[in-house]
Length: 97
Image (cartoon, rainbow, N blue to C red; front, side):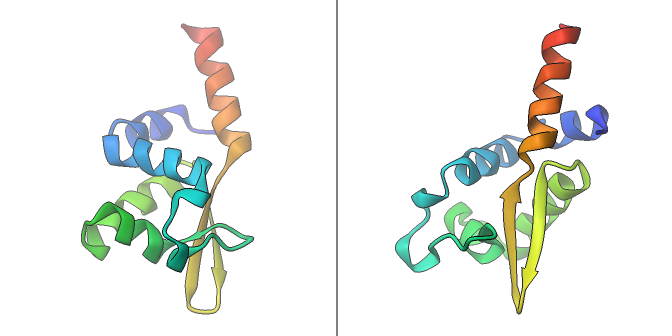
């Protein structure tokens, strides 16, 4: 776990919002129902209202930090939270602050 990368990823409000969305994936529109392996990138992009390239850049930062787990299923990129990394980061923050 790279705490610096996680801090950098969490510095952006949209990235924190995406993590919150993925915590409760049933909040995505019915047409973008969550798959067993996560939520399609296209559903996140649609919910954000931002361009595909902007959302992809944010997602790439979160994957690099280890906050998201990408799973490719056919042409879909499914995303889910990496609960182990998130929990380890929270524990480290609780000990250090």
